[in-house]
Image (cartoon, rainbow, N blue to C red):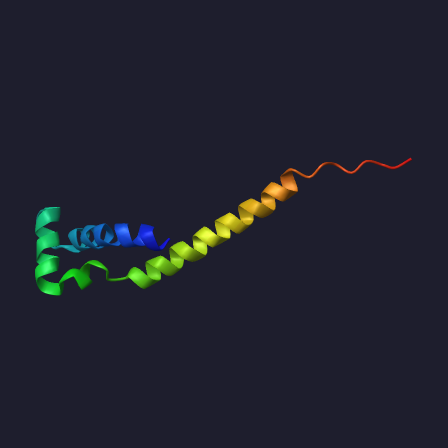
Length: 83
């Protein structure tokens, strides 16, 4: 989850800034990225990193745990009556 969020967080911040921009037409992504870097530096690209990382970690862990449990339930052999 850490690597995924680390790679996608800057893109998500730029996308969100572009969507929140006011005006007739949204600014180009490169314009938004350069403005963000100029105003907030590299740290600005990783705003909201911790909440996104926590969400991805919890969600991923839950999915894996549920998958493993369902796999056990679905692959159990039916019990046979003993004579």
